Amino acid sequence: MKIAIGADHGGYRLKDELVPLMQSLGHEVVDVGCSCDQSVDYPDYALPVCDLVAQGKADRGILVCGTGIGMSIAANKIPGIRCALVHDTFSAKATREHNDTNVLALGERVIGPGLAQDIVRIWLETPFSHTDRHVGRVNKIKEIESKYASHP
Ligand code: RB5
Image (tube, rainbow, N blue to C red; front, side, top):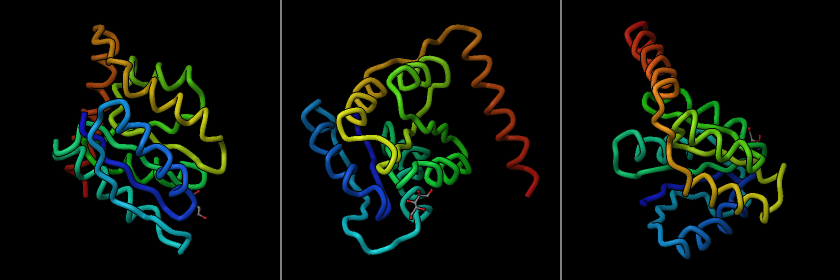
């Protein structure tokens, strides 16, 4: 798959550790930055990653900030994005099977690199369940998105 990844200054170290992992799993990685400790604003990195996913130019996106919270809030404002903030392997699997999430948010200040790598591996390899109930619920999310898109 083609994976877009981005981080702010609170998450770039973990991002830089996840890039070689994904490449070793055979994925193509597009890294939109950032790459240093200089303070930046997480929405500026959530947007290019989510743009690539929403436009179909990347299959999935991964966002890392200090907590993962700001990135996940910003990502979920973008039509077509279903982003989950995940810090455990059970949720990594469940959010793919149940929610068909296309963006994963992680907090570098919350979990260590070993757990983050397990989460990413599981999240990338788990398919959506495609059962009627989960398809129906995701479609309801899409209906909410459409409804509010027409109410500026
Ligand atoms: C940056 O200090 C921090 O606020 C950011 O990385 C993130 O945790 C925000 O949600």
